[in-house]
Length: 290
Image (cartoon, rainbow, N blue to C red; front, top):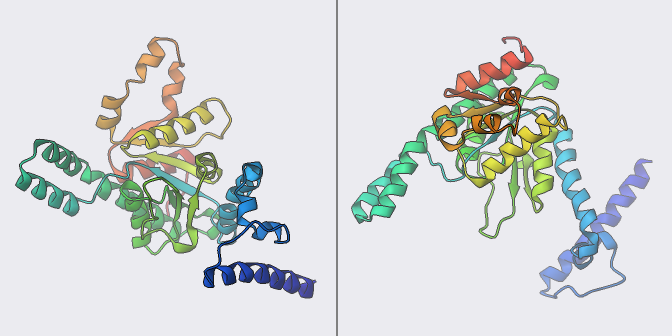
């Protein structure tokens, strides 16, 4: 059996070596009926093979996380535009030097929101410290969208504690690279938003949403909808920064207008402190102190 597996692996390696040879010699790939199907990029990128690409984006991160024992995650969403306080202060100083009102307004907003970077980083540390003392099967791992801002901060907090952490990045027209604090073997890149969001939920034991833009709102409301409609198991949904969220969205209006039930407002919980966010998750699952 092992000999057969070795033979198959050599054949796979040979197929990819052939492609690499074309690249090294500067020869463009041409459509080739004789090329192995899985080693044929033109074939794999056809519209008709989209279903295969879906499967690949489902399998690759799933198998990699399974191999490393990543079964339970705490998902952190939030703006990619938030910066740590020192950088935000530098932006403000440059903006004030420029004297341009619009730049100063943006820099002041960045400085106001820089507190959330430190809070997300501390939350990542808290989760990682707790998990260190747990058996492997009970450990919780920070998972983010893998980009800058709040995502970087949460990954960085876990990285500070030497913990594995996950980044589920997305290919965008304005190229976005994975932040440097995601564990390299757990830094994934997606083409399809739908598959990426599915991976967020597959292992999520809680969702913590910091202030963010359209992407954060999209991800947050998809999770709330899945839980409300019982398409996903109930999980703690934490909105970090109560003043921000209550100013942004008046969800009580939906109750007043009969669009949701009053009990639906209990699907999420507001917090303003990293430890309070973690305490809420611990209480939800009745986790033991370690």
